[in-house]
Image (tube, rainbow, N blue to C red):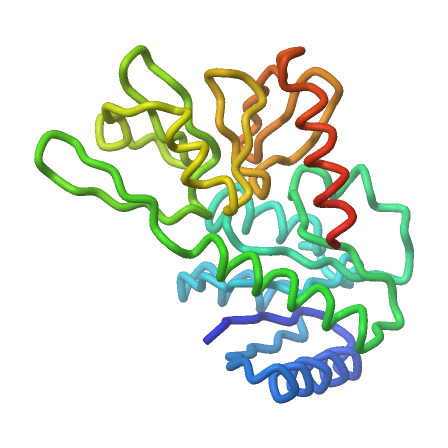
Length: 242
């Protein structure tokens, strides 16, 4: 079951998008729990009060209220559920820089068509299925698990490896191990090296640059010359898959 929210103050758009999602659900044999909100303020209030954790949120940018889509997206991604996939939609394409801080998964221009929505939804579901499995590690004699999608990156700390997440988990994420072994284990789960000491989750990179990446928690990590071409090739491959 995938939890999806639609928020637009135009009821007709919400209805049309809901119909499209129902079609996608039927064609692909998915199960969706869809919640519709015709007010940004109502969505914001309901989100906070009910502690909703949606898998994906379709959010109109130009809500005709004080709390527009960018503000609500910022609250969702930076204060509550960073793993939620935001899909913004608008009649305009002028918002690219403003949306950067909310790290949206995609941006769709209106009018919304079936194939575009289907491609986005299937892409997100494939990602969730790929990264929803746990990474297992041991601290002393205790076995711990961490869902892959929650992991920003692994970093070496001498003979130990630290799992860096959106939260500071301290000693609970520091264990004996080799980063190279973890890299081999997670190669098919979209983790890649940018440095001999950093194994990064592709889906938690907010921005790629020539000599560094910015993670979704704002942390900047250097790409060393040794890994520069590999990072570039991986990036081009992932772009081609979309």
